[in-house]
Image (cartoon, rainbow, N blue to C red; front, side, top):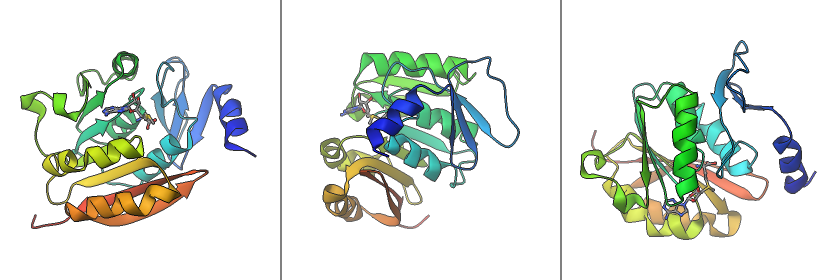
Amino acid sequence: MSSKILSAILEAMDEILVGKRLRIVRDGQAGEVPGRITLIVKRGAFGSGEHETTVSCLEELERLDLEGKSVLDIGCGTGILSIAALKLGADYAVCVDIAREAIDTTSENARLNGLDSRIYPVLGTVDMIPDHLRKPYDVILANIYPEVLRSIVCKVAELSKPGTLFVGSGVMWGDNTEIIELYKKVGFRLLVNRWLEQYTTFVMVREGCL
Ligand SMILES: C[S@@+](CC[C@H](N)C(=O)[O-])C[C@H]1O[C@@H](n2cnc3c(N)ncnc32)[C@H](O)[C@@H]1O
């Protein structure tokens, strides 16, 4: 089945199960189901659970130990990845996006999930992160376009520390090796490299003394 048809089917669904532990719903009244963490994600920006890159990132996130971690989500869209990270145990998330509708949707979704006190939306690029939030993060997420992944590599290095996990996505196979090599040059080591439909998703860790 083509990814476009699959996306159209998923868009019509009120509930999407992702990976082994996550469940996306649109309605705050949808309740819980045993064995699944519910993410309430209203549409309004990119990232409501239908796209293969979002799904791949969520599947990688649910495998990580996120307990108590700080998260930087570059290109947050609906905030879906940060909401998942927080519900999987992370402490707080800074959500950055250049699109006003993404920041508004992230704020609304944070509220619907009871996470508004732990999600800090920032309108703009990573350069616009205010000084008090400009520090090394435990986890950096960037499901974004290849040209942006290339342009932010030094910023990601600045906002990381030894042990920081970097989840990158939105890259087709043709660009995958080149982009991973860029992140290796600033100190990251590849842990996972995978693809779903047309896109690749990779998990890297920043090396160095802890
Ligand atoms: C592919 S969507 C990912 C949304 C969500 N994180 C997900 O995983 O489904 C990429 C998002 O990046 C945002 N974006 C594009 N260029 C950006 C930049 N330079 N800095 C921050 N956000 C950017 C877009 O507005 C869009 O919301």
